[in-house]
Image (cartoon, rainbow, N blue to C red; front, side):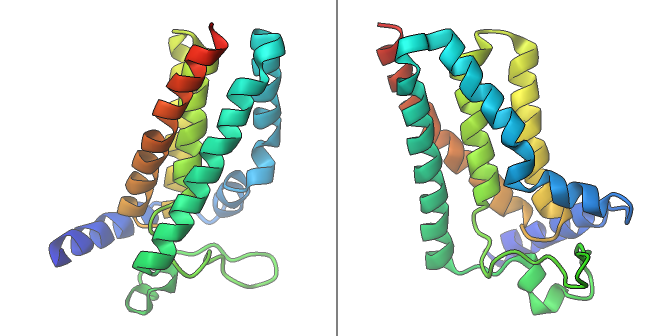
Length: 189
């Protein structure tokens, strides 16, 4: 297990080290939930347009999947208690953190395993794949690239290890895929 943790830290330090000071505030904004509100509203609009009187089914399942994803991540975080890299004393001199306008460094919460940002973004990517994309490769690619990008922002900002992010993606997939496939059958009946 120690070898896996060491590998995770090594990959984290390499990826976190790929930063530029001018990019820090942009990445910080891009990782904020409110920034993506237009995307979320577009998804809701497309669902309502496509499924009309049955649009409540996929939207309720989206809310259910995001809630399950988020709360499962919180449960695992509070059970495993793995500190975020930004909270790891042994890494403080080696990592890059974003310094906010008030002079404080963005560190996230106390624990980081798994990444709820990554899990929730994967939930939305799977939702788009099943309910919106309808075999349009560019939409599928855009949804998954967006999810991967959000995962990377967590490493860039120093608040998650790569394994936190990968576990978040996996958890989001495991939670959402069967739920959305079940909901898809109800919508198309």
